[in-house]
Length: 123
Image (cartoon, rainbow, N blue to C red; front, side):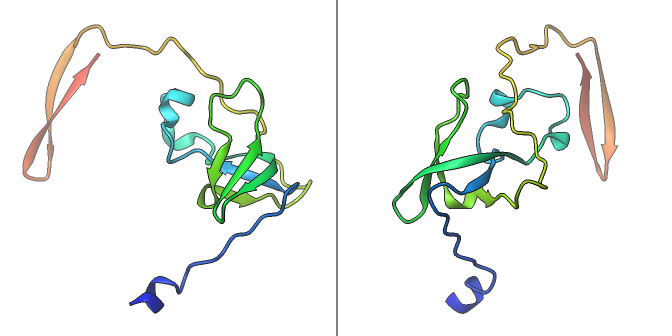
């Protein structure tokens, strides 16, 4: 069973000073970058420089001073930056403190999804 689990596993080891891309997906990305379409957001941000290795699977990154993300990340959330030809958005998404809150439901309908009715609301 362990052999099956380890088939696609790869050990990632980075050195201090390497450039890596940071994955924001597992964190509450809606609080970091509220957008209407979450599918269209970038999956990786960076490149960021590794400042130090903390234990066997965590690294401290040099993030911009205005970022509200903890600088220590697990190795599974990092990806090696491929070099200067790799062009990725380096700025973290802006934090919007004024989120749109629905005031009232204007219209309501039920749509068929298979054998059940799914409620939809216009706000």
